[in-house]
View 1 (tube, rainbow, N blue to C red):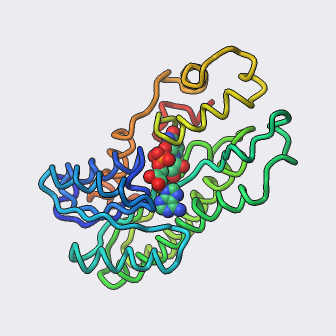
View 2 (cartoon, rainbow, N blue to C red; view 1 turned 90 degrees about the vertical axis):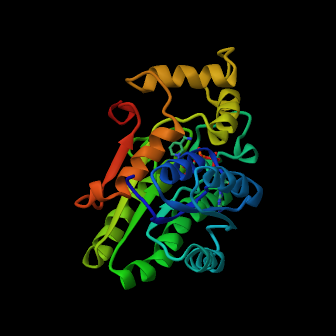
Length: 275
Ligand code: NAD
């Protein structure tokens, strides 16, 4: 078992990738605090972790709240007995229905400031707050692992996910700086950059995309068909990644196998980062 008896927090743990990460960590021996601002989803995933024989708690946390993030760490240390692994997976696409105009969806003028701010609040400030709250625990014990979930979108341009792509590039940059800050304390800080996984985020995203993207809106394709086409076009392996693929990468970076790896961003994207 790669992370036997380690204690992990997974933010956004009620969602598609968060669930995959929580389950993989548990299968490799970790106890998991499943954190999400949707407590019902977190509770379901915590239940699945318990089925593996590992301990789990569900914590309601909005990662944009400094107070709630601190409570998340304190509760985990108190109820699970410590903290070894912090996985920052909570994120939003920022591609909100209200933000999408009926035409000119690809004009920078039509990116609303409130959507830009909301995207950065969750994807960047949320990651910063969670890393910062875990740091004192990790410094004190002179060990720890942080894995931030970025995206291939943070490595390549996007015409329809501009705020998202920019926020995910920020996660990569933040991870590198955080790795430097934590290196003297023997804490590894890394990123995983997933490709395309069919989670609720992409289900909703593809429905909007097919309505507004100039290359797709008159194509007659349904939302899932359009996303299937993107996968065929953009991903050299020509298939979706899975939550389990991401979970395995996170588990590796959280394990002793990754002892010498820090400040890195691991693409798990079937080669999409090359396109
Ligand atoms: P998802 O929408 O299925 O799950 C996201 C989870 O985060 C949800 O459970 C949601 O409740 C939670 N969340 C949202 N805002 C929150 C907040 N303020 N505080 C706490 N929890 C919050 O999305 P997903 O596809 O599972 O994505 C998870 C992460 O992976 C995100 O950071 C996303 O950017 C990244 N990612 C996803 C893909 C993909 O193809 N699905 C690709 C690359 C990166």
